[in-house]
Figure 1 (tube, rainbow, N blue to C red):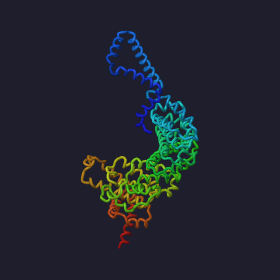
Figure 2: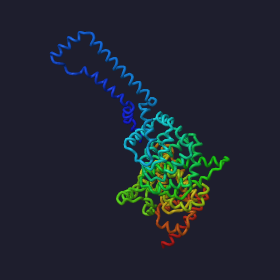
Figure 3: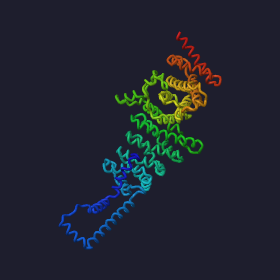
Figure 4: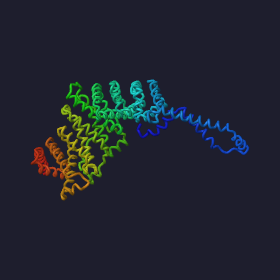
Amino acid sequence: MTKEDVDSVERESVAAMAGNENELLLQSENKSNDSDAPELNDAEHTENKSESNSPQPQENQNNEDAVDTADEQELLERMRADAVGDTMYSKKFILQTLMRLSQQKPESALELDLEDDLCKLWDMSVSPEVVALLLESDAIELIMFAIAGSEDVRLYEILTGLLGNMCAQVECVEQLTANADWIELLLKLCTCMDTCMLLQLMRIYQYVMAHVVSGKEQLAIDWYICFAACESSAKNLGFILQQSVSDELLIAALKAINAVLASCALVEEENAQSNNKLKPFAEVFLVQELCDGVNNAFIRLMRDDLEKQADEVDGLAGDQLPVANSNDNDDDDGDDDSQSLPKINCDVEVIQTYLNICTILVQLPEAQSSMDLYAASIMYCLTRILQFLQQPMQLLPLGERQEEYLEDLAHICSCLKYFYEKDAFVHLLGIWTILSKHIVDYADYDENDFESCEDEPRWQYEEHAFKLLRLLGHMLIRADESILVKDMQEMDGNRVEMLRAALQVEQDEDVILQSAQLRLSAVLNEVAGQAK
C-alpha cells in the first residue's frame, strides 16, 4: 500500500474510532434539523402559538440545546483522546486489530474482515506516529509470530508490507535487527515464490540498507552475520532473479541486492581492519546462483520490442541468455539503420543498478579466479548496454549518467582482464565512432563556440573517446589473432579503418596503443591477403 491512499483511509479510520459515538452525534444533528420541518396547519399553528407564550417550554428547549452541545463536546474530547498523535487514526482500532491478529489461528484461513482491517493498518503505517504506537505495542514481535505460524501467502504479503512501511523509521529497523531470529525468518521468506509478497520483502531489504548508508553501520554488520549464517541466503536471492517473470519483481530484487551488496561490502572493508572474524564477503555472496540470476534478470529487463512481443504471444519466460545477433553491428546514434532495429526500452536506473552490482562482484580478488565462468554472460550484458546507448538520444549529449555508464563499463572490462568478445567489441567500436564523429563535427569551431552549445565541453568528449580507444586497444591485444582475422572480415570496414588511423595518431604516447596498432595492422594485412 502506498502513501497516496492514506486520505481515503483516514475517513474509514475515524468511523472505526468513533464507533457508537457517531450515532450520538447523528442524533444531535437530527435534532437540530427539526426546526426545518414544514409549517403546521392553522389549528396546530394557533395552538402552538398560544403555547409559545408560556416560558416553561422555552426553558426546556434551552436545556435540551445545552445537553446536545455538551454531548457533542464530550464526543469530540473522547475522539481526540483516542487519536494517534496529531493524526485522525484511532488507537482503539489499531490495538484491536493487533489483538485480533494475535488470536489468528495458524491453521485457519485469513478472515475477510481481519484482512480488510490489516490492510487499513498497512495504509496507516506510513505515518511515523502510527509506527511509534506499533513499536510501543510490540507489533514487530506479533508480526513475526504471525508469519512464522502461518502458511497464508496473503497474510505474508500484508504483514511484510506493513513491516516495510514501518522500516522507513530507523527505530523499527533497530528493533528488528536486534533479534537475529527475525532476520533469519525474513531471509527464509525468499523461498516463497509469491510475487506480491516478495515485492514487499525486497522493500524491507532496501529500507534496512538505506539506514546503513545514513550512518547506522552496525545494522549492516548484524545483517551480514545473518547472511553468512544462512548459507542459502544468496542462493535464494539468485533463484528469485532466475525464476520470476515479473519485471516489477526483477527490478525490485536487483535494487534490493544492490543495496545489500553495497552495505555488506562496507562491512568487508572494515572487517579487514578489525579483529572481527567474519566470513569472507566472497564466500557469502559470490555464488553462481546469484551471479547467474543477476545477469539473466538484466537480460530480461533489457529485452527489445520484438522479444517482448514474443514473450506476450508465446508466454516465454526469457530466463535463458539469448545468442547475440551479429546483424546488429551497424547501430549508430541517429543513423537510419539503427532506426530500423528493434528498440530497447529500459529504465536507466536498472542499467546503473546492474553496473553497480557487477562492479562490486567482479572487483573481488576471489572473483578473478572464477570470472571465466561469468565473463561471457557479463560481456553480453555490457553489449546490451552499448546497444542501448547507440539508440537516438541515449548517448548525446554526453551527460553525467552516460559518463558513469562508460566509466563503469571500462572498469568492469579491466576486472575481466579485457575479455574479448566480438559483439561487445563491435558495439564498443560503435560508441567510440559516435564520440569521434561528434568531436569532428565541431572541428571548425573554436572552444568558446563549442561550449556555447547546449552540450558538454569538448575536452570531455575527447577524454572519454580516448578512454574507449585504450579499452579497444586492450581487447585487441587480448584477443587471439586467428579469431580477430575471422571477426574483422565481418566488421564494418570504415569503422575499423577509423580505429587504425586513431591508433596510429595516438600510439607515440601510449604503449598499449602501440601494441594494439601493430596487432590491428597485422590482422588487417592478413585479411587483405586472404581477400586476394
